[in-house]
Length: 315
Image (cartoon, rainbow, N blue to C red; front, side, top):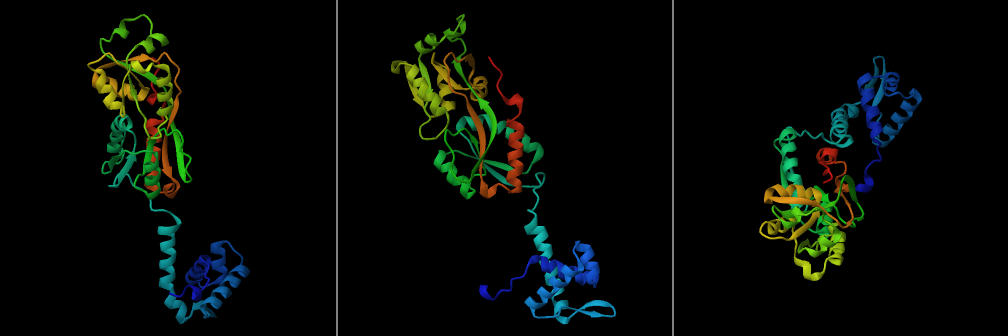
């Protein structure tokens, strides 16, 4: 196909062709499209010039198609139908019948906190769909969102202003402390900052994930004497497991705490030092901003995790 020899045909001219074909009248075709008869005549002249044929000729029966126009009728109808069905409007997403696999990124605790609620909702609204859970650091997530390997990321990156990355707020997270059942702290009348500093601690190390927890981690390491940091671990779930048979204290985001506490028999305490809150968001790439399936998934997640009742009550 020689690109430079292609005619400059406006799609609207094909619509005009189709209306004249149906009505066999410039007047009726003009009325159907809401344009003047003069504009209709000028458009027909343009199309005649571009295709090198009269296309429609006045007869006693009206505007009758030429042999060329008759040959074009089916092709023009197919082009217009394809445009309206496949191009003008994206194919709708039907969650009830879709077997789409949604690739979702989150941290280990994000998976633990979000996936049970999300899969429950998917079972009700999109019973044939599935989820592929993916982990990764900020750079990996940005690249995967751009390529489409990840449909969505749920988390709180401290800095994510890459071009093309969209985001939507879900909820604001704060920190609380977790200890084992029977921990000596649970019998105290108050739990103040100095008592907090005197404990042995497990600290979550954010590493190179880019997670907003890195700010809280830095403050904790300033507040707590190094000799009181029993260990630093890379995951929330591992940190919670280590509390079961020790008197360590774990300072952790509240949704993570309430997810892990019943699983490992832990108790929560108000954190006595000031740590920065952070906003949990969902992230996606502009390439897929108008994908109907992606729009549906983001709406579902915002509906589930943006609800007021998902926020953790004060202790």
